[in-house]
Amino acid sequence: MPSYRAFGLGIRSCLALPELERTDGGGDVVVEIDESVGRRPAVASPGGDHVTVTPDEAILAIQGVGEFVVRGGRSIVIHPAPGASDDLLRLYLVGSVFALLLYQRGLLVLHASAVAIGEGAVAFLGEPGAGKSSLAAELHARGHRVLSDDLTALDVAPDGIRVRPAFPQLKLTPSSWRFLGHQAASLRVLHADEEKRGLPVAAGFQRSPRPLERLYVLGEGDDVRVERFGLRDAVLELVRHSYPSRLLHSGGIEHLRQCADVARRVPVYRLERSRDLRALPEVGQLVAHHAAACPA
Amino acid sequence: MERNRRIQINDSVASAELDDGVVLLNADTGIYFGLDEVGARIWRLIEGGGTEAEVARRLLDEFDAEPSQVKRDLSDFVNLLVSNDLATVAPA
Image (cartoon, rainbow over all chains, first blue to last red; front, side, top):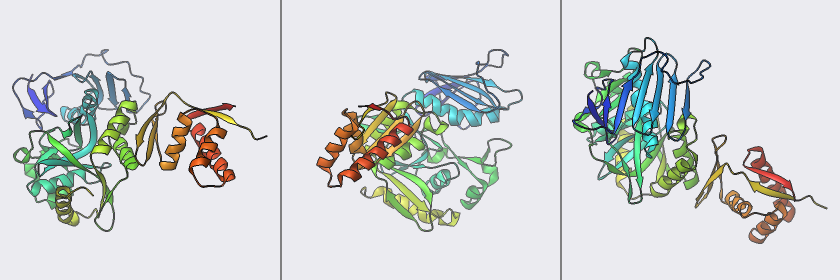
């Protein structure tokens, strides 16, 4: 079984994970595939996708894909639906399934992309399609190293809040990769029905954790505007854009406290800008300057 | 005589205190609520235990406002807590 490194963990996986970097050892997490009939978890799914989350076990059931059972932050068992391709399973595995695993390990998992700026890191939060990956890609093109895309795992420790390096890939829409000057041939096809493609960023990947210094929630506006959230709104933004609440499961008091802890220690801003890709260089430049200045 | 109510915060409610308010979570429903500074102050008074009349008295000590207005606003606030399963009331 090959071993990979992602989010500071050694992951042995039955399913090949080409977007992750290979490593020697590493048995923090094991990913297995169980195709035997009758071994699937007894989940009542009356026609629809669903998630169950208990403190030690999470089950993600997606129609036409399969069921993913995550236990103790150490084990992922995939029960593929008939005909589900490896590509399809991988899309969910390195997304929501990894998010649940990292949550079980006590990390604060944001729906965000993060890049290194100066000695620290900043992360962009937002709904799907808000432009997190495009902005990370723009900063990458400006020479900033990428820490994560779509999932950002934070170690919230008394001595600091650090972003764990995820894996070296940015998931971009066709309009974004074309705007940034990439050729389709140099991008990874993630799944036949998925128009987004994976941009490998091995050369510009930040492989050691970085202290988190700023959080930006992406919004739309006619002009570029950065405004700091009050603490209460910052906490609610973090809750909204983190796991498991993003999957409509409350993380309880521990998750709420973690979000409040991060909001007290790291400034959270609303970053408004035009969604027109032509504004991207200006926004990238502004973020790079803003992140390097003193918090306001 | 005015009716008075004893207010009890539900066990399933978690809160995070902040400089500019408080964030509440109803763990049963998974719904989050944000209260501003005034809402947070009322929340803390309710947490301290007591009846609606006692909370109103404390608020009148702290805020320069019409007693009838304070009572009305407090009553609305308590009704909102109850309708969102954050608190229950019983006749005092």
